[in-house]
Length: 126
Image (cartoon, rainbow, N blue to C red):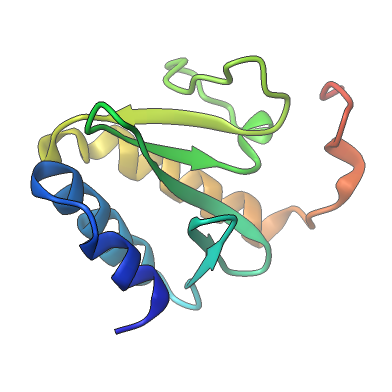
């Protein structure tokens, strides 16, 4: 068992199930790898795609590192005064639905088509 899976199995109940489902989902995409960074699971392909952040209330934030580049037409992402990272909070396994899949697909598309640069740090998107 790798470090990310060890981390996930330290949680219990629905929170563990959400983490495990998201972990397996992310690894089902070609060339996506999981790394344990900053004390949470991160998922990479060419660059950072997303990370999983378990909350004390039993929910899980699926956080996208390049969310400021998303179209996010349904305004599902919560930026919480962050410039780059946007999250969607999942409280039940059934919350991993078509909307979440579309967000993941958008993150992967951005990773595939727009080179990651640090130009977004500290600046608003133009």
